[in-house]
Length: 230
Image 1: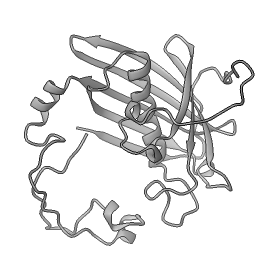
Image 2: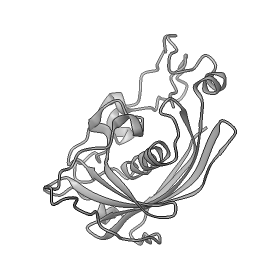
Image 3: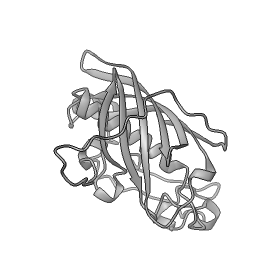
């Protein structure tokens, strides 16, 4: 079960951590690409918001990221700002990347996100004339294996132009595919049972741009089938 909470707050406080900069290697031009999409459990490169990382201390990392100017989901209805939930997704991606790239979690393991909470500063979410470049400081606590299960607590500060745009925490664990199948039963990612979806409320009422992104239905509506995915 995933608990997702967020709060917009103009007085978001930065987390402690180093502000070390990326180092240029061998005087090569500074090139940018996203991290592998498999490391953040996304099917499309366009959904990857991290561009790299480096360790700057014991269980402390500096990550770079970028939010596109336009996104079909993580943009406010008026098109002027990044959706605060994009900060939460970026924090989620940071945790997944570090678990796979630094702590040895196999790519085939499934993630269970138990808790994700974050605060975002509305003044730092505006969409400018170019993509929004980010620096993240990520602190990993109690990242460890217990048998065949890996778990940890993540604390992240997201900075834009040196100012804190959002902070957040996440607690998650990873389990092998066989364990995940037992947990999900018939509702695994490979389930082929049809899903009967109720007619959603109008997109404008849910604060979304596209009807396909609406997950709310009018009172009394019924939905059948396995539609939840992790």
